[in-house]
Structures are given as structure tokens and as C-alpha cells.
Length: 187
Image (tube, rainbow, N blue to C red; front, side, top):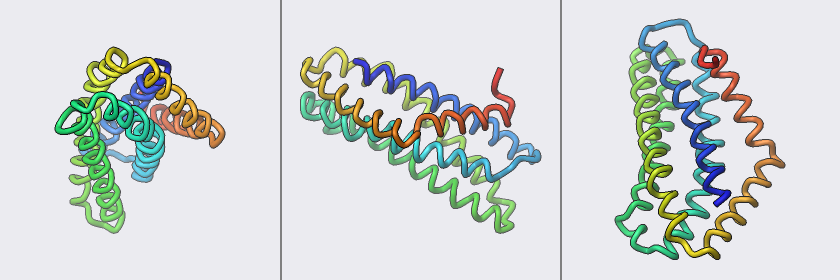
């Protein structure tokens, strides 16, 4: 399935950002000089590339079609688990944004909340991506009927085309590279 291949590549881009998050968090821990505004760039990437672009394809297309064809994956199954993890990830990012605002207002103790929410998000997403890549996506490829796989590919392609017109992928991959370069993660 072409759409699964694209989602796996998006996971690799998201994992690159998780490395950036970890590196920034470590610098916060060491109280090193960093531009805390870069965390807002990270949040922008997460909300618009990881969540609105990538998770939309999962939630509105892949998971929806899997639920219709494989109901055992929905109720208290792996799809429900993935959706819960998406919501927990959103909560970590909301809490990170709140901590950043309070830190910028002068509450130095909020550095701890910046680290805690950033690292919690990164840990959750790393484990989440492993489960999707090695289990859920494999189930979709093996168990869904061909017409459902084609439907997933077609609907995902429409989302990709729309995002390309808006420049979503280019914008966020450029932002990712910028942050990797800034934090010295690029080879």
C-alpha cells in the first residue's frame, strides 16, 4: 500500500523531530543558552505535520476503514489504543505550550514542566510509531480486502495532494532541517 509507505516515511520525519526535542530538553536541563521560541516551532511541526497532516490520514482514513472491515481492532483493540495515544500526545503538547508561556513570564520552575512534557511526548511517540509500523500497518496490509486498501490509498493521496498545494510537507521538512542544524543533529 503506497499510503502506508508514505505514513512510514512521515514517521521517520517525526522521529527526527523527537531527536530534536530530546536535544533541546537536555539543553534546558543543563540550563544552557537556547532560543525557547524554538519550542514553539517544534509545537507548530507537531500540530500541523504530525497531527493535522499525518494523524488525519490515520484517524480519518486508515483507522476508519480498518474499523469498518476489522471491527475487532476497534472496540478495546489496537485502534482504540492508538487513538488514546494520539489524545495523550496532544495533552503533552498543550501542557508544553502552557509551561513555555509561564516560563517566559518569569517562572523558572516551569523549565521542569518543559522537560517533562517534551520528553513524555517523545517517549510516547517513539513507542507509538513502533506499534503502528510493526503491527497496525502490517495488519492493514495483510487483512484488509483489496478494495479497502485501494480506498485508503485514494483518500490518502487526496490528502497528500491538498497538503502539497498548501506546501505543508516542504514547510515542515524545511523547519525540521533548520532545527536539526541549529541543535547540531545533522551529519
